[in-house]
Figure 1 (cartoon, rainbow, N blue to C red):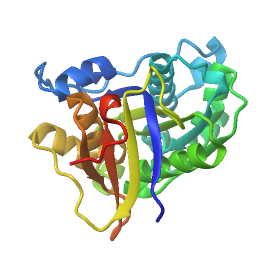
Figure 2 (cartoon, helix red, strand yellow):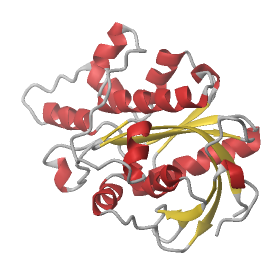
Figure 3 (spheres, rainbow, N blue to C red):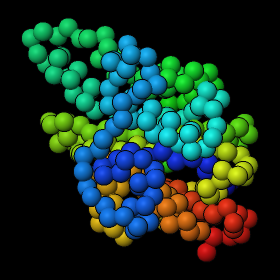
Figure 4 (cartoon, one colour):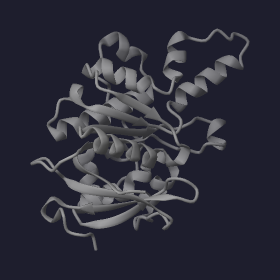
Length: 273
């Protein structure tokens, strides 16, 4: 695989005990203690009231992290191409649909149905931001974050335009949790640009590898990384928070993983150690 690269200009993050990138950055860098609490997802105030009432957890999470990343980048949300990646979409909504279909009254709510479609967050994003740029939606099971990042990097490389990656996964209630044990919601968004700018946080160079995935030193973060497919992004986020030039390996396919060489703005162009 030919290496792909891009410049990170903005990060959005919501997860267990992590309420936004500013808070998460301090926690990951070790400047603030980590307190494990249930994920708190902000209401999507950017949506009209009618659409806001119909949204589920996945849509709310996607919009929250997307808007945070875009705001940090200083770019207009409507101008950005987008890539959405999720291994399963809205687990709560899926659970409610299954309960309805297993009941005596099997009339399914149209709202539940349209929220079950895998590209529902992309549609709500366009309503919330007025975005008309191209949007891709994909799923690669536990490798969904890496797959989404590769897709976004390809768009940056081929089209030469900034691209917003939004990767998220939500929890499943019992009994589906027994076979898909995602305990809580986690989402991360990255604004990726083809060239360095005043907003650049880091440059990433990506290539495939057979090296093992990076394991996080903090037990709580490592458990989070393993328990939610979107949280497979944590080694990258950990390096960004520490503001260190480094290399990390992210889970992707069973026998192939994704290596990211990360350089801070002041050392862009120099090889990672």
